[in-house]
Image 1: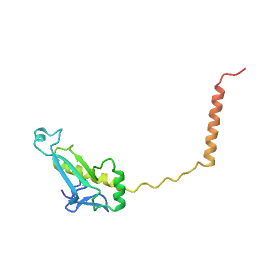
Image 2: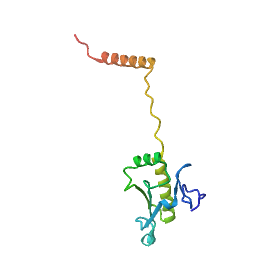
Image 3: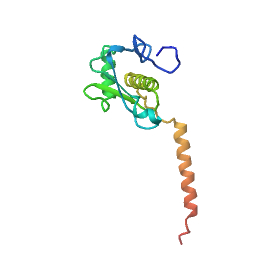
Length: 152
């Protein structure tokens, strides 16, 4: 796989590029291949096209301490002993599944290490907006009052 094939993140000899600042070294990635179910004709029984890509998040040197803590918190439900695993088996070829797995892992890690959005600053409605709301409530109440049967 090359970095210029246009199929999203790749794993060149240097590693998996997550964003401009984070690259997971290739030696930290672990690949497993197995037979996939689904389409593929006769080849599905003989080709190891299913791909599992694992990365030990806790032991990785690719992240800063802040990024590691953020990722561990955000990926809490997906981790098994500090290792995150993505699976790709929807394509017929192992190469396409490898590309899909690298893309998924890069997106997953990028989302997990992204800083939280800025806190919302609470605001209050303006006096004019409060007045418009009260006027609308008054008009609606008046409409409903006029629909009532007369009381004698």
